[in-house]
Amino acid sequence: MVHFTVALVVTSALFLIAAQFAAGKGDTFNMVGRWTLYLASGFLLLTLAAGFLAFNSVTHDDTAHIVMKTHRAWALVAATVTLLSALILFRSKDGGRLVVAGVTAAAMLVMVTGYFGAELVYRHGIGVARLPVASDHNHTGGGEHDHDAGVEQDPTESSNHVDGGGHDHGDGVSEKTPVMVANTLHQALTDGDKATVKTLLAGDLLVLEGGHSQTSAKDYMEGHMLSDMAFLAHMTREVKEQTSGNSDRVAWVKTTSSLKGTYKDKEMNLTSTETLVLRRSDTGWKIVFIEWGQQ
Image (cartoon, rainbow, N blue to C red; front, side, top):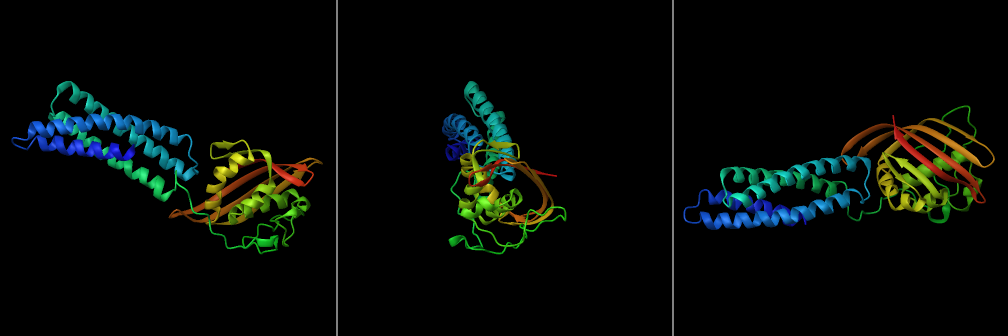
């Protein structure tokens, strides 16, 4: 839909411009420009419908969401100018200067819209299958490994939930304290370790992140988890503060940390807040609620 719209709008503009200057061919060029514009308008309506469907359905992160909104704004302006030009041309039956100016503007607007669409696909990977995020760790066999970012280290003197030793990514989840579960989750996301993430999440998980929500572990793992992994793989984390509390069956962990790195050619220096609520199960603490934000 997109490619037909772009090609037909640009072709229409070229023929309508040529009709103003081509002696003896003006009527023919005007006819070609008129019908390609009508066809472009039809494909444009289909493209808008597909675009709004994609806007509300494809998996994306917060950075891509900004580009999606920009792309949508340019698309609506381009569509308005194109459809108005087609309407005027339909009623006047000739390619006057007003129509020529309108279609020329529409072609330029379509090109700008296409640029942002290409950014979404080729820079942000929206709507296409992504390559898996490379990991520097080998988790085969669930052996111990060193966490360079120190996420298993307790940043406060008052908390004694975390030790600096290695930990098991498999059946040993039941032995983890809530704080250790929180830190294991972050490291698993950083490493792209989907299997470990799955062992930490309750099925009825609720995730709130960047104005979006997922209402199950399945929804999160098939959606925002992939963009979270892609982002965290490029970040260095330093825990600033970590507090927790728990009763016999329910626990909470709040972590404030700094995230620094380069992601999609942009330097990042963020203060991240993470709030987890955990529920004790037969196999240990499971995360039932996650809220991520930025200060």
